[in-house]
Length: 323
Image 1 (cartoon, rainbow, N blue to C red):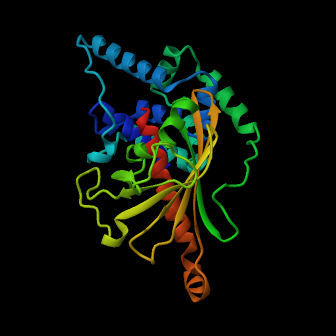
Image 2 (tube, rainbow, N blue to C red):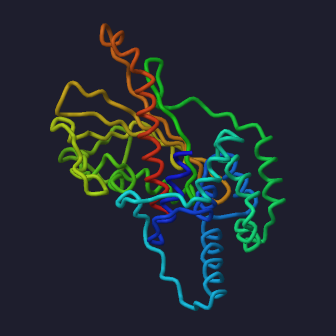
């Protein structure tokens, strides 16, 4: 639910709005990596098409009350740089019902949207040459289809603590690969990288396994708040440790200015999907040895949660580049 809420408010922010409504929730579902998003995309819904349908609906609503003005062009997503976002009462009520009746996952939210009495979603679907029944059928089929088997994480080892998540990106595998495989573009999608530069004088521009770069963490967050990072953790060495073109890539991050930091490996697997690319992200780091391992045992669930949270931010960063 958190990921869905963020995506909806990101879509609202493109139009300078602070209230996220049903149409923004619909756009967020189109981007969902869960069965609801897969069902919508299998039915032929794309993010561009859904956005166009929302814009056309808003224009028709204004004309119906005698207001004939051209809507300003949408801007970039600024949700993470601004504050004051809220759900409209009807959107909040729908989310509560989805949580009570269906556990609150994306499929439950989509079913509540399809049954929503205002007719807004039926209108949007009609503009996309679809009906409520067609989407319900697509969702039923998607939920009854077994998920594909996944290979083991390239980043994982027997001694690794690993977090995982998946994200849908509305761009082709080739386009997404060009982003995540170029270390100099890492500041575009990794929130922990502010700037990046070659590591050493004998460096080449070609990313090959074993080559590394130095990354500097940002000093401020996107919303302008100071970023509190200890001095010895500000510089990070980013090294390419695994790659298979258009299929997977793994970046290791270590801390050259301290012996206390534990290196972690971020792996990204790319799979073609209707309307874009499905990403499988995993982050792992070695467990401590000796007494530190015993002391750290109770913290592992927290470590996994923090890893998941970091992966959600990274996945969101990759998605926003193409939105």
